[in-house]
Length: 247
Image (cartoon, rainbow, N blue to C red):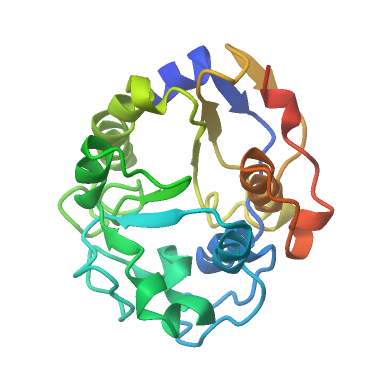
């Protein structure tokens, strides 16, 4: 993954970052509620716990989820491959499910370039590649290909979609966090295995490497800290700060 590795070399890399669980879904909830909520990728319920959307609303912060291959704006339905609902935690929150206004903040990924052009980027943006571009499946679907093909597709997606944002002068004050939901299924260290996490942006220490143990609850704390939001739900309230990454 030459592009991801170039980001890690130029910006900052967390070398001891571990997911919280297997399979995927609990990690997405940890990133947005500070709790696992469920470890069932087929979960169809609604999450009523305090969450990042509720906190942003109370704090007057804007947010939007840009989701590749989302069937339609505000879509809250089941999987529509290569879109996977269990990678889109916002679609489960009671705050969103019960509000067409908030649901409208979940949009197809193609909306991002229009929002950037119109200087309409929210304060928090969640960028989600589909299953063919997130290193899980093959770039043509399914799993019958080499891992190198999956990783190359993910790297190409990052270069095509993230690099222009990092280089955009209008977003010079932004922080970009690139992470995976979980490690290899066979790796259960700290619950979900070791994953790569790269943090980029003008305020990030250049060529910085951290050996501190972090998990997704620290990333949730970091998001809230960066936006000067004091409220920290679930395990983010006691999670280690990631302030060491910044100048």
